[in-house]
Image 1 (cartoon, rainbow, N blue to C red):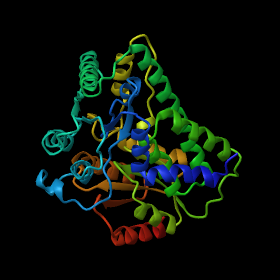
Image 2 (cartoon, rainbow, N blue to C red; image 1 turned 90 degrees about the horizontal axis):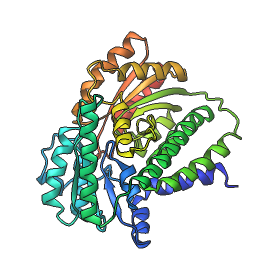
Image 3 (cartoon, rainbow, N blue to C red; image 1 turned 90 degrees about the vertical axis):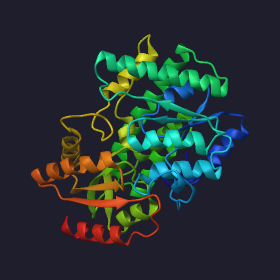
Image 4 (cartoon, rainbow, N blue to C red; image 1 turned 180 degrees about the vertical axis):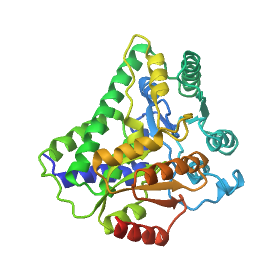
Length: 372
């Protein structure tokens, strides 16, 4: 049996070197489809015999993308286009971009002109997603994606295969929820926790689930952590910067839960399993809540974060805010008020895909750790 260190090193190798995984799939003759955040229908891609591959950008200096975007736009979106222009996605069969924020809408249109050799496939979601007409609209969007994937890759779609794909992703969801609870219980470091989530973006679902099962088996044999530091819940779109996570570790801060789009938010809801798998996926999307890019007039996300803190007996909340992400910026006001009403300490850290220095974050976290 592999040791805990060996298993975490597996996740780390994929999370920090996604290009190696990308090239391996191409060398094996697989057709890879880029999946831009958030809620891209990976089940459909998987069911058509294609490899869904996360396209969340990268930490790099932007140059070419600046010709297509203003400076005041999400750096995640900019860095996706930057990688495309630089040829980092060469060999990719298509790129699916959902339309859940204005920045993503701009990315899709700019991609068509800047990266002509990789087809852009839009996934148009409704904001009024819960009513029957919203579910019907989502199904129509999936049908458009299927047709575009067929044209771009020559792959075929079969409902029975989608049923199997839904089962595979539901299994991964359950494993991710279980491993998340175990990592909090066993005191797993923030960098290792991040690797588990980030690696999922760049692996076939069956491979990642197998690794999760190995991790769960080993974690269950570990003693519960006697953590002398502080425990926090993180919130945001993306919180995978190694520089930031090392600051957490240097200040003995453990992440015990999150409301991060790239982390546990992806695995909260399972799709139902009926004889209509496309509608099952649409129902799954309809049941998604507590997210800044999904319409919610009551803003229940803030209450969810407070409940997480209480459930995990955390000491506070760290909001990792991606600069110029308007939906997350709007939600921060509600999160701040909810934390203050519940007497929960919170800290705000702004991050950017171009950040190289984290002195400000270091100062904020040192002060926050002392306050907790």
